[in-house]
Length: 275
Ligand SMILES: [Zn+2]
Image (cartoon, rainbow, N blue to C red; front, top):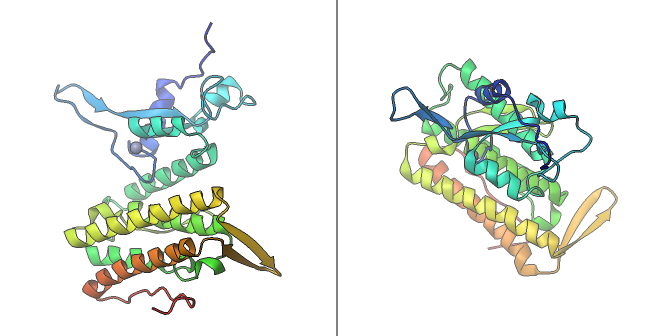
């Protein structure tokens, strides 16, 4: 006999979907998961109530300490589109329960904020206001310090991730997870040039995270801790330079938008590089 599955009831699935406004909870996706079917009485649904800890033994993130009731409870579910529900199950190392819990919390907060602000665009709908918000998201040490003088690499990675989420969803979170500002994701920007530049910036941010991950696996840097300070020493100078140059490039693209909007530009001021 196959392992018993602790599936969600339709009631639970329904609540999970509604709590996030029927949108995929992956902050990088946010796809609407239902809409009108050609047949007038039907609804097209591509949403899935996915299990955070698997419904059956051997599944992704299965937690044997959970009871069947806990496994099929609301707290163990997350609403995703079909593609993202597949994604989280093929790589449970990249998508551990903690990450999914975070996605869920963000998606639920966004849904209720949309309800509270009456219109999904909230108060900030103009391109310029949105750009100002995005620029604010880049005004942090992760875009100011030389890579060798960064604090913990994990914090640096987290800061880059938060910036990607802010660009995609319009929300910025503090370290403890509170929402400090809500705007809209870059997809609503009307000016096509600005939108393209922001997409470009987003791709560069993703490549920083990807390169950082490889660097860690390959032990491309060593960590020196003296007193309370942390310094990173890269075995590969070109790689360290790449992190600095990519961030500089990101701020350059962002600054070109700032100039058109007429707001203060941000500069990456690494002391090591003088060009
Ligand atoms: Zn999705």
